[in-house]
Image (cartoon, rainbow, N blue to C red):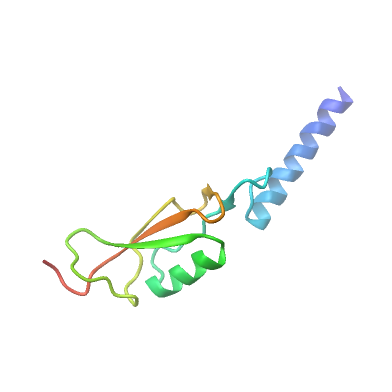
Length: 98
């Protein structure tokens, strides 16, 4: 019974440590930062620094993305994990409408 408690405590500590440093306990993923409401240019920089590729798409009805506009959605969502080097898609409103 003592080994089971030790294993659980070790796993719990690894889980806590992984969430504090932005990695899953098995180091296979990185926590995706929350970039919604950030300027698109800053969001791109933060995601790249976290180790992700970034693809910017236009929000529905948009004709031209603007780097100073805020990010309205992201995929994968903030707080989830993704493989380093994978792509995070951010949606940015346009400077005009169709």
